[in-house]
Amino acid sequence: QVQLVESGGGLVQVGESLRLSCAAPGSIFSLSTMGWYRQAPGNQRELVARITSGGSTVYADSVKGRFTISRDNAKNTVYLQMNSLKPEDTAVYYCKAVLMVSWSEYWGQGTQVTVSS
Image 1 (tube, rainbow, N blue to C red):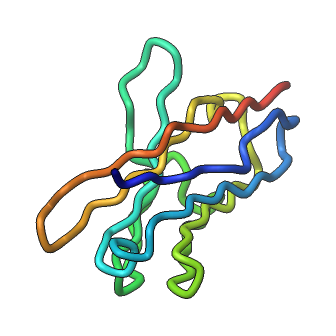
Image 2 (cartoon, one colour):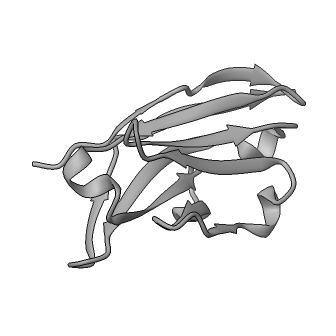
């Protein structure tokens, strides 16, 4: 059973920052594209950002310039640095790993981010 463990969510004010972390098993991390997704109540889950094993990144337009995804292959951890948070960033944030050799997908349990105005 592959487990992704997320941490770092919480309640912040508009304009503040948070950093999310997601730890994955070493057996899959270096071979996986890692991504952060979010789902607000009543909405579909959407891509926030993803990063390949080689470090290439993709961001949703709504977070470009505010969020940064990074990975530490030595720690088997992917991060999402979120700056200048807005109320519309409020959602449950999920970590996803796609193992590129098999296209298998693994999800974390989610962490709540709430931005209060």
